[in-house]
Image (cartoon, rainbow, N blue to C red; front, side, top):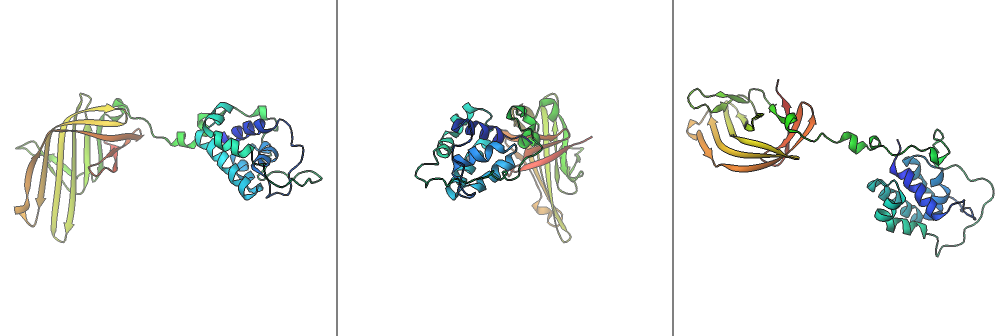
Length: 281
């Protein structure tokens, strides 16, 4: 996989020198950042190779080199302008990392190949393909942006029987069996959301149902809900005196929403946590 590290290191090396250094570096593990760029980076074709090049430097040189390639990777720099604009301090520190150090001891014979030498890559730097958005794992894993057509429909999580059918008398949905929730986003802009939490202690069971309804609209990655009707119902099988049905106020809610698949979405719940819903057939 090609990375911004490869391209930027080549650009940085080009700023430092257009030809091999006049004095070859001394023993590996003593190189300055400038020497790492000139003598190791230019032989790399992968990000792993560049990261390993940091090990060839002195403690200071290796640290400066690691900071440089990390900055390049973070900002996805592919050209000289990006590198100077966003990683200027790191570039300057690396290229000037040869001042105040002992003279480099020249060595004879060929230099050993860089670590993790990428032998399958072309030796001509011009042969490197242009960067592609598919090279960025973060982009590949990014969830889809929600669309009105995509979120319209009936969604649910948890027990499919958590929310019961509407009461014949009032039309309100009743607590069901188990814990879960439903969300209906109609194409005409109406919505209904219901959640039920069931708890069991021995033979005693409680059910806590919350229902809201009104209108909805999508604002980027936010689901804007205009709640016109709200009710909370509590049922205690062992202590019926605790039962209640209580109306709530009309209000506006804004909840983060995102698609994680064509039939899956996530929506923040009342506690501010993302709850996963699946589309109901």
